[in-house]
Length: 129
Image 1 (cartoon, rainbow, N blue to C red):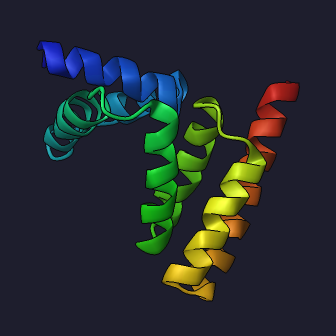
Image 2 (image 1 turned 180 degrees about the vertical axis):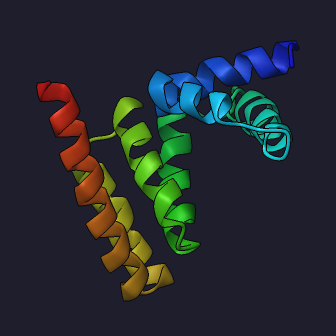
């Protein structure tokens, strides 16, 4: 796929999620999953994340809350790492997850805190290597 929104989305997706993750997702796509990768890159990252109304940092904050509320552990861990890349502090992430606990339930917050700690450990290990 090669269009302006896709290219914009690929740039933002790589900036937020990291080059290794994005390359692996695209390279591992097959005939069944390739359309999903293209849709996510173009529409999610190019059309929505590429809009000017919110900063990447603000979008990360919203995503952490929504993904926590939806109980999507793989995506949450990935987006915690992205939030760090977008300039959120661990304290800000903690506050978002506390907010999730009040409005979405303690079990959602407990799982989210656990996953965030795992993402922090991975980020620390990557930074020290």
